[in-house]
Amino acid sequence: MALQSALSSTRSIGNILLVEIKVDEWRTSSAGAYSLNYYRLADKVGTIAVPGLGFDYYGLGQLMSVSASSSEIRPSSNEVTIALSGLTNSALQEFINSKIKGSRVRIHRGILINSSNSVSSTVPAGIPGGIDPNPILRFQGFVNNIQFDEEWDSDSRTSTNTVILNCASTVDIMQNKISGRRTNPESHKKFFSTDVSMDRVPNLETAFFDFGAKK
Amino acid sequence: MSFIDEVLAVGSTLFSRVAKSDMGKNIAKTIALGVILNQTQKSINKQNSKPDTANTTQPDRFVREQLSPDTKHAIPVVYGTAFVKGVITDAWLTADKTTMWYCVTICEKTGNTNLGAGAASVLSFEEIYLNESLITFQSDGITVASITDANANTSTDPAGLIKIYCFNNGSTSPVVPTGYVNGGLSSAYSLMPNWTANHTMSGLVFALVKVEYSKEKNVTSLGEIEFKIKNTMTQPGDCLYDYMTNTRYGAGIPSAEIYLS
Image (cartoon, rainbow over all chains, first blue to last red):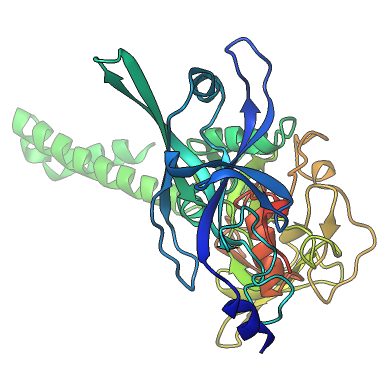
C-alpha cells in the first residue's frame, strides 16, 4: 500500500542515462602532465545529483546520445557508441591531448520522479518494493576507438564539433584478449624481467641431443 | 707354404702334361684366383661374426633426440583437478652423454582463495604418468620405482633411471607428489645443470625430469609425460574472480570494478 500510495502522488517518471568515463591519462594541453580525471555526463539538462553513486553528473541534455544496447541474462559482448556534440574548443583539446582510448566507461540508468534533478537511491524514496538500487549499471566497458567530426557552417563561419566514442564491453574485451604467458623469453620477461628460465626455448627448437652417444 | 702356393702346385700337377704350354698356366691361375676370392670372403665373414669386445663397456647406439619445445605455447591455468601434459622449456645433456635433464612447464600458479582475500591456492601433483602408465615412486617421492599401465601390467624397467622433481610455485618451492614425504628437497637451480639463481621459473608449476640412458631397459628418452594437477581453488566464484582479476593469465580487471556482493 505504501508503494501504491507513493506512486499515486508521482506526477511523472523519467529515466536518465549517466555516463562515467575514467581517463587515467588526462591533460588539457599537449605539453601538460597527465593526471586522472573523470567525465561524468548525463543526458538531461542541469546538474544531476546521484547519491547512489556518490557524485554529481553534468547534464548535457540532447548534446549527448548513447546508442542502444541489449540487456541479456547472460553476459554478452556489446558495443555502445557515445556521441558528444556541441563541444567547446577547450573541451575538444582535452579529448585530443588525453589518452581516451582504453578509458573505462560505465553507463548507469537512473529513474527520475517528478522531474527532479536528483536520482534517489531508491524510487520511491524509502518505500520498500520500489526500485532499489537506483541507478542501475547498464553497461561497463572500455573506449576502443574515438572519432572527431566537424561540421562547418559556411554562413556563420563556425564549426560544430562532435566526438564519438566507441566502447567495447568488458565481455567483448575478455573474448578478444590473448591471455597469459607463452613459453618464450619475451613473453616470460614481460612479467618477470630478470627470470631467464625461458631463454633457451627458441634454441631448443633446433637443437639435437646425442643421448647415450659414446664419449 | 701358403695356400696360394699349394693351389698353384696342384694346378701345375694336374695340368703337367700341358704345363709346358701357356694354357696350363692360365688354368692354374684361374683356379687360384677363385680360391683366393673364396677364402677372402670367408675371412671377412668370420671377422664380422666376432664379438666387438673392445666396445662392450660403451653405451649402445645412441638416440639423437630432437625436442619439441614451442615458443607459442600458452601456459594453462588449472582450477580444481586436471591432466596436463606440459611443455619442455629447457633441456641439458650431461658431458658423459648418459643423462638428460628436462624442464617441463606445466601450468600457472594461481592466486588466493576466498575472492582473493583468503589463503593462497596450493597446486599439488596427484599423479604422474609416463607413456600412459602410472608412476609409482620410491619412498623419496622423486625416483621412479615402477610404472603400471591401464591393464594393470607393472614394469620396473625405468626403476632408478628416471627421477622427477616437482615444483608448485617457482624454483624454490619443491614438493613431492601426494602421498609421499621428503624433507630434503632442493631448489630447481641447484639440481638442473647450468641453472643459476636467475632461473626462478616465477609463478610456474613445473617439473625437472632426470633420465639416465639405458638401452637394455629401453629408457632412451623422456617419452610422453602427463601430470594430474590438483588446485585447492575449486569454488566457482573464486576461480572466476581469480581469472577476471589476474593481470598475468586473466583479464586484468581491477577488483574495484567487480561487484562482489
